Image (cartoon, rainbow, N blue to C red; front, side, top):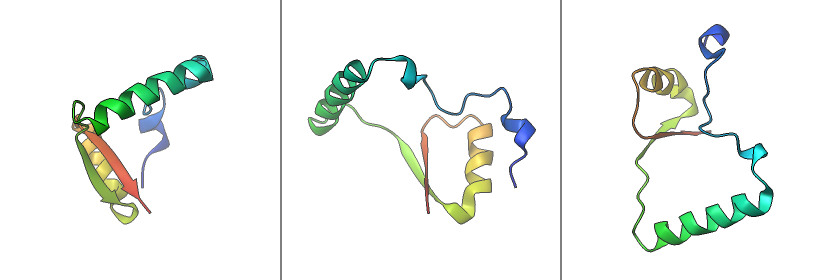
Amino acid sequence: MIDFYALYGRRVISHAAPQVPAADRQIALDAMAEHVLAGRLHVEYERYALDDIEDAWAELLRGAHRKLLIEP
């Protein structure tokens, strides 16, 4: 179980996307997708099953330097 107070005041999502106009977000996402498809941008990630959410949370608290994907 994840303690609510361990999350309180922490930013889990890395940016405040709603504050950026939708058109600007779309331009940025399109540019990133172009770089990914061209092989110029690589995102490091590790997949976790939903049943292993506690392990993913522990990895995040250790300071993971990659994206952690939780799959149902």
